[in-house]
Image 1 (cartoon, rainbow, N blue to C red):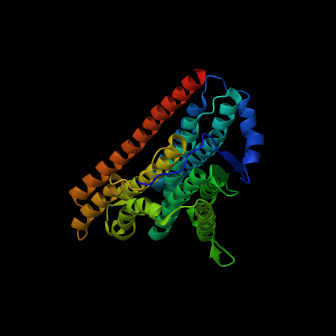
Image 2: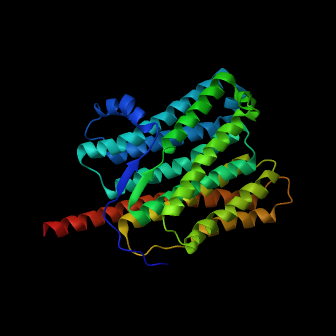
Image 3: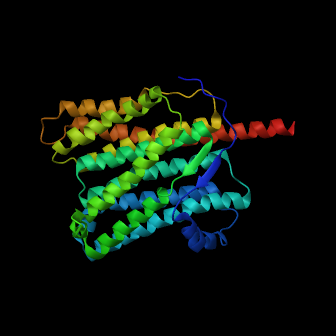
Length: 356
């Protein structure tokens, strides 16, 4: 553990998003006029997150239908796209509704970015799997996505300022929207077409990865992060990364369990980022290392090593993946509930102190 400097009760925000003002002016401002006051900002956040989660589950569950290019597959693809852009609108509306009703709160900020972290770590993977991106590249994008959110919250935590990048979350949503629309219209083979000798798929991939890497580098440079602070993140994600890159492709019937592996990775990344956001608002001593987080990946890796020479995964590995992934989801949900209770209690305590 490390003792941290005195935290402040608020922080500044600058939004450099290239497309957020356009979406706000054309859509979100118009929708806000009709939003009833009983629709709370946190309810908007959860609604948007649910829509994005539904889009991800549609892609995972109906991937073969979507790849086939059938009319039904195209319909599901466009529905996923609509759900995703709806999430982008709700992601703007929650903050706008909070300011309109004067109901901004530390937990509202936590919930907004906590949900964004979950979605970012679960939405990109099924799209890449559907498009046939190589395993190593899928893992690299997932790992850098997790690192970008984690590093960005280190910057906020240590500088009391949040810089939203020009190419950030909303731009990622637009990218996914373009990908799903083009796939729906022209079929999955459109991504093999070349532009200046580079396939469209490769161009989209490396542009997206470059934008994320820029966020990582910029955030880490300005966050004053110490070398020892990396260990919790590295030890949490390396075991499951080894499973995904080295062992998972060896199994003939492993698609569902590779999906669970990415769910586990996303939940661990969300938990690590959530700890930073909790500390931003609750203060106290920040815990660099949590033994339970790397243990989840180590359990999966250990179970995989016992069945690495089998054509199909052993019952032990399958059971371990299902149980550990479920525990990771439960743990992240518990983190959200616990944060709500603690931040509410802190807010009530401060209110009573000011009243006295």
